[in-house]
Image (tube, rainbow, N blue to C red; front, side, top):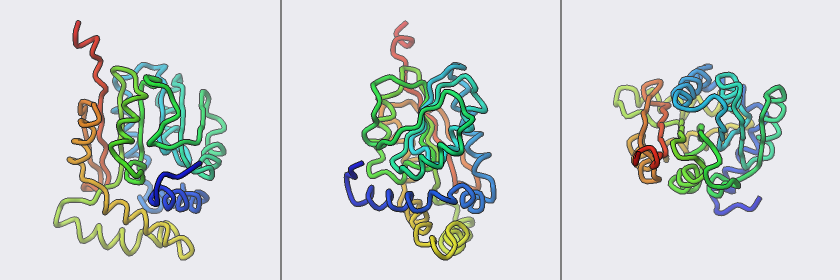
Length: 241
């Protein structure tokens, strides 16, 4: 798949490299909390969606969000998209028992789906790794049906001056070694760098609105080191009735 710019090329190489062992690294980095955060976010998104919803996870990685979707909404039709073949290979191995699942390679900035294809779209710890945050959100808006829900969950730098020194110590010094060991620490330093260069939660909320969504809620975890933002694609027909 052709990369559009240097950031995409670099991120592609990073995730191709760390696909093997990525799940266990995430468990170490978050001390096992990342799955609880994701499940809480998905429950909030699913509250207003039908049982047989069509759901898309952009940047699906090794498939843990799709697993959560399947557990919380067994009748859903699931689609996972990632630009890394190695990540998709890991997802395929992890999700062999998940029904109604399609995995596809593709770019978040140019989704290979028709307009209004999905009831729900999630972007989990992936938006900050795209080359154009607004474009990715606009593409999510395009493929959502009217009334559909967007979920963005990602890493952020905590704003609290009390928490920030401990965060910096952990994510700059400890996390790369904990996640990648000696061989892959450079790749995991990128994850720290991408978080520090990412926008704030309030800026993300503004971008979600700019992409066309109504803000439908937000929540932070671990003093703001992780947060999710929900957006709803307004159903104009219902509003006009």
